[in-house]
Length: 104
Image (tube, rainbow, N blue to C red; front, top):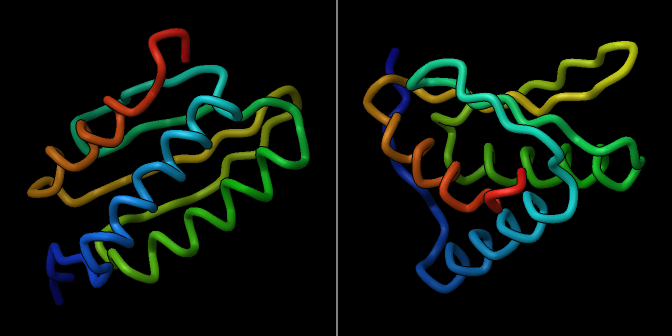
């Protein structure tokens, strides 16, 4: 069964969500790896706030855009939020990546 590429947020709510992502990426992500056209790995800073914000934002994103897949990778010295999309949504992943500040 294929999950449709659809978002249930209104236009105003979607704009607000984009700003939430922009703020999270600027304040909590210290490194980015684009591992494929379908996957983006975001290394989080060491704060508890970064981890809890990542979980909250990912859960809310998944609720409105079911095609996104989120997971956490916990390593001894780092924590990663991994974002995956189906191949037909790779452009959306690229758009998310454009929100990351150049230093990220």
